Image (cartoon, rainbow, N blue to C red; front, top):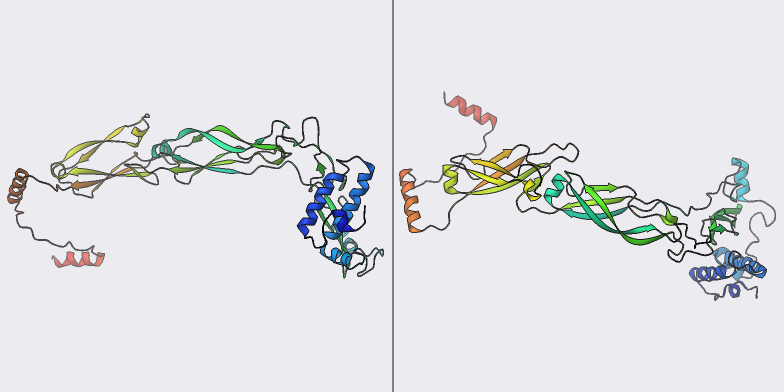
Amino acid sequence: MSQDFYELLGVSRDADADAIKKAYRRLARQYHPDVNPDPDAQETFKTVSHAYEVLSDPQKRAAYDRGGDPFGGGFGGAGQGFSFTDIMDAFFGGGAGGQQGSTGGRGPRPRVRRGQDALIRLEVQLAEAAFGVTRELKVDTAVRCTACNGDGAAPGSKPITCETCHGGGEVAHVQRSFLGEIRTLRPCAACKGFGTIIPDPCRECAGDGRVRARRSLTVKIPAGVDNGTRVQLSEQGEVGPGGGPAGDLYVEIHVAPHAVFRRNGTDLHATVSVPMTAAALGTVLTLPTLESDLGTEGEQSFDLDIAPGTQSGITTTLRGLGVPGLRTQTRGDLVVTVVVETPTKLDSAQEDLLRELAKLRGEEAVEGSLRPAHKSVFNRFRDAFSQH
């Protein structure tokens, strides 16, 4: 095989970084000792890795294209043993970033990691949000692969130690600067930083240790939830890579509008319309409570007393007929606003009766008057003194 680095990787001289990386990965999968036991393949892999190290570094590639030594020249000279790492070791006693194990690298990435949290939205009725409900949900999440039990290797096989980084997950890269050699640790390209390689990945999950599936679960919505409330289901979210522990599932509540009641905190508000005659004479109305939507235990109706002469807009507060608090479970109130309906269509007999009523009340000719605005405390004192 030719020693020209471009020919070794099978790319043109104007190939970009992505093309060089793809070519190297293709050859690495072909000649890596973990997958190709041929002794010649190991030497080929070393040669290909050396070519990739040069062509993937812009400075080394430029030096190679000029016909120079990409590892020679620079401050301190090659082979003098003077490097930036040596300076850091002299001052700090090591740990400036060298080989794994001697200079405190980060080590291999874990294959098993916690999964992400998941969020779904659930619409419930106002009564369900107020008094609680249990729902069956269908969720699509990542679950542990049963074929490989989450380790990503095909049955009968197992991950092996990477021979490139010897299980460290990192390899040292050397660059020359005016200070000398600068050694940095980068994730191993052969094992992607894991320190191990899966030679025979599971065919069900492609080595990830998890697959997507639809599953059913039961969620209990507590009494008192409101729009935007999130119910947390621990470890019911996405299973992590490598069959790692699952994240949490959050169920965000959306309360559908109600035809009668409007919620404000733990209070309920409703409006009832009564005829003009009922408002004038008084009556008692029997109205349904919010519990009646579910048919559960509790008051299914309540009596609203319309006193004689009730005016439109008056409110009545019924204690303890609102919504339970999410944490206190103390119920709020039901506030009912009365709207008096004025008849719009009258027959001749009804008109005669109303005219007779107006005559009896002296309201045949009514002069409009404006009510005074809200008086200040000073004005009320002034009016009180002026009466004496």
